[in-house]
Amino acid sequence: MNQILNLVYEQDKNSTPIPWISYFEGRDHVSGSSFIMTPNEDIEICGISIENQDFIAESRTRLPSLLQEIMMLST
Image 1 (tube, one colour):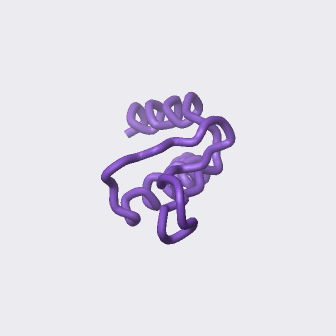
Image 2: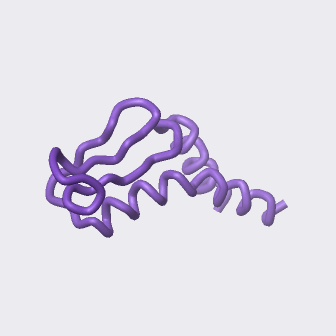
Image 3: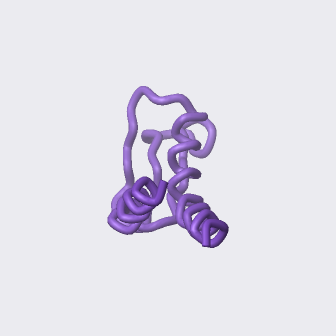
């Protein structure tokens, strides 16, 4: 389990910083494309459901606090 946590921790550390915010055309704005806004460059995703795009953005944003909680509980 520690190997997996260490791997996920490293991936988190090397990923685009948070927060990631999902903007979906037709729900959040009326023209343009659906995308995930990040502190760096936006991520455009084609052919994905609103639920999946929201899940990706929310999961990335919450991952650091979840990792911290897991590490705290395992010590």
